[in-house]
Length: 341
Figure 1 (cartoon, rainbow, N blue to C red):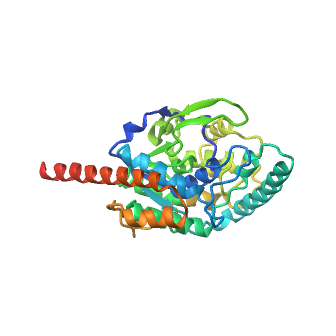
Figure 2: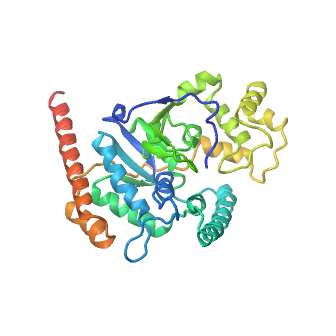
């Protein structure tokens, strides 16, 4: 879920084209879970599957929606989660319990002939096989990806702080606590989307959140923003009972430091707040990565998506054509810029 800062952070909607020419470090797990959640049968909740019964919703989203980003001139870099910190284990266990309960309700809804999409979405799980297949697809598409040693958003934020990318792409605001200069939301779900349980559609556009604007607007430091997150609750702690974003901000402005705040709130979480605080400030990252966009391998894309996973050859060939044009155009722009130096 990530930290819920939406009520207090300033954001602005943009058009996708405004990100043309920008490098975006995308939180891969966050994005793949979006695909697993939304690319499903609207009634039964069943994901896309190939003839062998393997889920392919994540591959569908990765192929078609990433190609849309590339066609818009965006240069995506996918960053995959590594080993989570030990204080996230409870959250991981709790999420599995929620998924199991959702699976039961999904099955019950199907048996009663009721709409089951909501339960199906909550039951989504990203497996090791899905992760491997996602990396394989990115390789043949020519899209770079990086394996983070720990949290993907932490490495995305690190790349942004080093000005290697323009922003972190994620639905969660955790990257702001990790120090990402910018966060872009709705990157992979831009367009018309159905409102849950209603026959109504709404237009979803990318949102940009600037860290410095957030800090200036709230009148706090990044360190204090982390404390706000701890009070609300993060993936690593449950937060303080009955404390939302506005109350957390008020507490931070009144007491300033984590030590003073902890002396004035009832911290019941088993995890050490100091340890979580330090993790947000200095998470494990790596400098071992290669960021390079390559010519898409048409033959391997066809083999993997059409022959192996039963996708439409015609649709896949259109994506390949789009990727090839974008790659060629990108190289021409880069060469022109180099020659003009």
